[in-house]
Image 1 (spheres, one colour):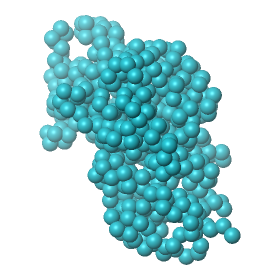
Image 2 (image 1 turned 90 degrees about the vertical axis):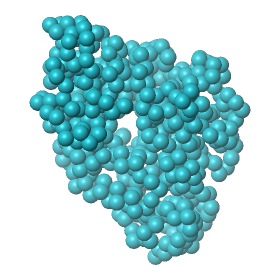
Image 3 (image 1 turned 135 degrees about the vertical axis):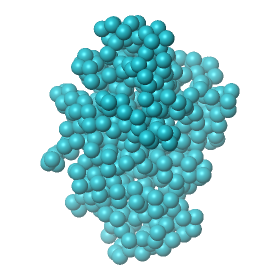
Image 4 (image 1 turned 90 degrees about the horizontal axis):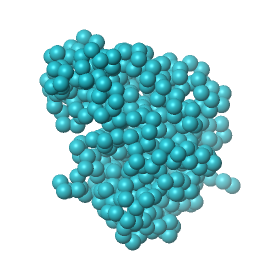
Length: 511
């Protein structure tokens, strides 16, 4: 596989995940929507990101926050109309922002017309569009961890669902299913969507023997261990389809196997996913050794395969990284430097740029059956309650310190986390080394992670002190602090020391 002479846009980009329910509310019903997002595109352009990935906006009964789709070609009224997607694409593209949608190929809603037909009788033409058995095996479902099989009284068989019973799995061994789902991609590509994040991309191929898996006896769920050769054949088909459209459309896969070695296989020979999420940092504590080993593994395995890495610290399914790091804003700011200077494409989850923590959700305010509401809380735009969410009470409570961490408050503060992200994104965009350069680890104390990024004559050194105490970091030559995570010493000469939990980007001193 040869390297392209001109890197595709997604290699140089920072992608921002929008969770539409919680981003911005355009109609005052307490739920974020597409008009609300469109009204905040200037904010995202000013932040300095290059593309947006939207969590599902399709018509859905919302048993799993939109990942249970009942119509792949319609927008749920909660979020707006199909015309709003067209307007979003036009407005985003006009600002130089690309737009990715979530593609959910593994399952549909049990209210999808396909499944309604499939369960209507055993001889229905769409019966084989889903996976039906007379007897269940021992496979376990995510979100609750019970059996992955549910009995259907009407047709007297069990159907398979790797997630909720309301999310029956499609049978991708049926060519009609493949054709129908390809048609879904074409529908959105022809509207101008720039690519897709593929939900649980590793789950679409199933063991045709339906053999028991001993790991399920130990409580493991299939969504974390399913890894079948047929998934790769299916992904090659999706890739061929997407590559047939102009504009370097992109496929980013959620391959939630927690093994970098296995994830690399989903890039194929450059003919499957363009990128696959690297989930290990989503589990990682604030620990230099953990990150050092993770980065080394990614560099070694993806580098050998000439596959392009991704980096992500938070998303809609995980606790926000500030919360995982003990609530420390200092650590969260240092992590921002780490995220935006590693080799690969960073994904920023909405609210990271504000330093948000998980919202406190009670049994009375809980919505998600999987208990993931904390990271999905509404973004605070204004200082004063209801923080820019006028009208009905928002669907979830706001995160802690919503007034102080609001966009309005942080725009007025020179050293805010929002200002830090804007500066980091601007520096990254201006630096070939940070966008596309080689990565080389540098010798350092075990509690310090340091590396060099270089492309041509452009050079940066990044050093992150994970410890709660200062550390020496001697460097030969003269270096200048381009940016400090804590705002201390920006523009000054580097004196060879790192403050506690401080991250620095250094460049050769001018003059």
